[in-house]
Length: 165
Image (tube, rainbow, N blue to C red; front, side, top):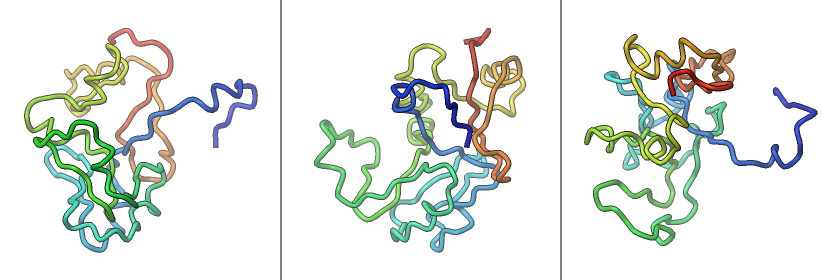
């Protein structure tokens, strides 16, 4: 909805990270008939229970961010090195970003944050006024995708440079 008519075509085709916005009021949770999609009370992360998912894709239709995907095929043959510490998705279920909840449980950062250049992605408790992510969001111009929908997206996109990153 915010297309820039002056942007070069090559920029329009560049990849853009589209992850779950871990909304305050997630539409995907409301429509899931099996409660396979749920929001954790302790940290607000919107989770998936792959064993409860029946593949109805209601959550995909409800998500205004396009942040879910359906596994039409078994993804395991496409994984070069399977890590037995982390769950592998299966055919017939929807999947989404969970901020690598199993890594968080082990005291690690989400894989995307770890792999990004320094300051490229930040993760933390925005409710904690002393956290790095709260300081960056407070001191810089940020946007959230489609906040007018009332979902309360918890992912902030930093526009311009950062004094703290």
